[in-house]
View 1: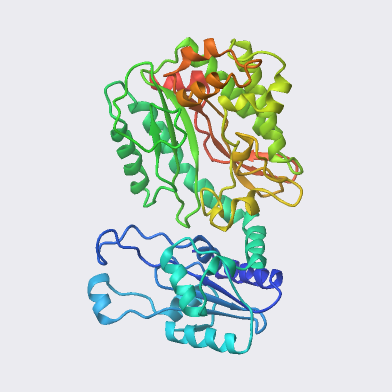
View 2: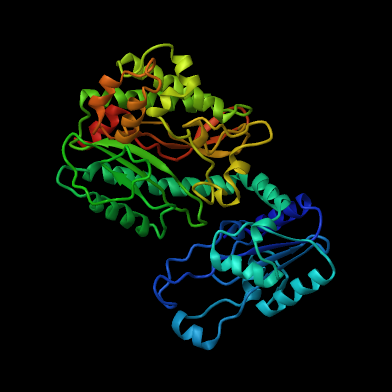
Length: 460
């Protein structure tokens, strides 16, 4: 938990950005796996964490804009709870830690909401992503189809505030990156032929647990890296296969890290793998160098696409005019996703509030072109934004077959040569970057190796 002054300031800024009424922010409750007493690991709602800071289930926050008051509602634990869970803090104790003077139980919350409704006051809430929170908002407000009632004013205010990271938040992200460093150094040493993917995933989860942390998203670890989000971990590692690991941990305050490395099983890249790897690495370095205030991330994405297309042309997989190929989208056969996404308390920061509102703005709108349409972040970059930079090259057999049969972009793609790369898999390299006043900084107190030489030196 941060100092209470931080939460007081955050709520004050939110009041300034939302004109009038009440702001209702529900915390999460525990969610049962198969019966009530056996819940999934608890993860607090990120917006509740940001404004109210309490990392426990069963609480709701209320901000009265007009009265300039903040409230915390929940139920104090009974002796029966304490028998099973040990001593627990009272609501007033928790409220004091985040600078809130007004508390009450959940019955009082309902009474306060009912009173506001009778007076015709506006009640702002964010779109819920959990069914139980949807039902609770419906119960409290007496409405249905709540997607139609979520406050656009509040959504925009929250996105505006949370997009800009404070020094305390950056420090938390770098704590998460310290864990990522330990993960990748360990995996590089144990990713040997004969191991199963699940063994490496177990090692990663063990490292994360040893830091008292949780993963920021389910680990992607696979020798079939052509599937972008591959969560199957049953394959045996074999020599000369590529292994993609895309993983992240959470800091003590739940800020995320998100790093990807691609490793050669057996410790050495083949010449073919090295050629593709160097293209991806060059494109990532180009992207990072281009990040600074005022740059649109879509423009940087397109620069990266040109580096990838030129690299693939140099080794004979693409042909023709590179600029035209990228403009028409031919490169997306190999690079079908966006360059990165915002990151903070959520690994895809604030995605629950709407990707178009987080990653786009009034000037930059989403494209409908294949590949370009998948950009999660395209807007102008501003100081203290934190985001990922993660280009990749993939050989997806189903996509190759479809485009080849349609003769799509045949003037830019040599399908006879691409055909030989089926089974290659994919390569992705990802780091976390923040925008400074004049440029950028790659986050992480110790950089995770990513050059061919660095990786091979560790793995052999």
